[in-house]
Amino acid sequence: MSLKIEEYVNLKALNTLGLESVARYFVRVESLVVLREALAFARERNLPVIPLGEGSNVVLSECLDALVLLIRLKGRVVVESQNDSVLLKVGAGEHWHSLVCWSLEQGFYGLENLALIPGCVGAAPVQNIGAYGVELKDRFVSLEAIDRQTGEIMTLSAEDCAFGYRDSVFKSRLLDQVVITSVTLRLSKTLMPELDYGALREKAEVLACERGQPTGMDICHAVCDIRREKLPDPKVIGNAGSFFKNPVVSDEHKAALKEKFAELPAYQVSDGWKLAAGWLIEQCGFKGCVKTDGAGVYEKQALVLVNHGNACGKAILKLAGEIQATVKERFSVNLEIEPRIY
Image (cartoon, rainbow, N blue to C red):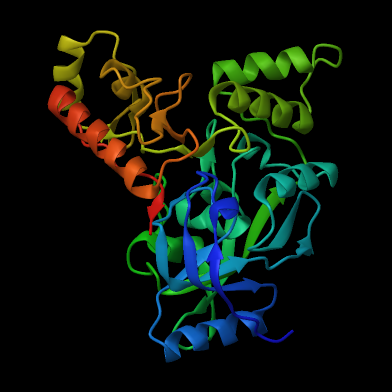
């Protein structure tokens, strides 16, 4: 397949916030050959490169003087099968939720708690996606990525990826240095349910009431139900999911806040206390707000910023800035934006 460069491509349908955005150059990437040729094209013209999967964790500006790569590298291959587990190599352009459902149909377990997370497989390590007690790093073995400057393929282990809470090496040392092409996961042939979250356990048990024990698909369906209750469908109202990370504060900071706000949700983690960003935002009065420029906050979940139809990237970021400033003033807490801004 030869390289096909498109020019001045509207990306509104390719980002879940539904933002008007035009890419100067655009390539649909379905093979490593095309990817290497596209990267060479960008190097020759000194163009920034923006990989795009499902466009679910980005805020795009109206004009992108860059080469946008629509990553559609496919493939699901069992590269190793043992008595109790499999190694599954998956193309970066595979749809994440479809992979979760497919793996369960094959009798491969471990991804069910991560159901309905939007995006493609290649974005999962960048964000170290996680939900309901499970993170990608718990199932991750390695990935392959192509160096943007040399076109060479490199393999990175879990240690190389330096995973953290919604964090990885791709947000620091390797930021804008590589394009992920595939991810290898270790999945179990035996279901070991992760049901520490009360709401998830209750829903899974209801679905499994006739059998006694929930199946992997029961857990998957329960996760989907919970997520649909909390998060809007991008097809109905533009959004990028959770817009801010849940902040982590020190013991002293948490104690001081608890004195003022007894109902403050706080969960102990290895490096302090994780606070619920949505709760902080709601307390500041932003939940359900709608700005004249079309930006707003979802009425059911204050952690989600939405586009009511005509907002641009600047409008979304302006509202995000107002939220950050207000939360900082009231709680002395810094909220970090989760989506990548281009």
